[in-house]
Image (cartoon, rainbow, N blue to C red; front, top):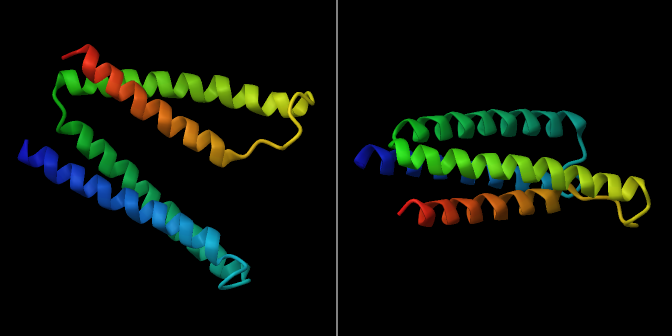
Length: 128
């Protein structure tokens, strides 16, 4: 359990670094700099931090027992399925003229986050 807490903190650190880096890039481009080179360097650094976050997530999973893994895998399966189905429906709705505004990726990310958190909570309660 001590190792899991440590890995959770490491995962949190990588996640915060990745989100903060992405936010800084989004704000900084055109506000603090207008250089393709600086933007490319920033994107490369953020990609490396993202890979670190993925590795930290993998290491966190190694500390889970079988029930925790089952809960997480089911939550991920639901999230992936809904992300694909809803994301493609969202995109095609614009292409077919059903909605007027072009789909924003940020909305899909918010949807994915909500579904993952919700399905994790539901699965945790289901297996108590």
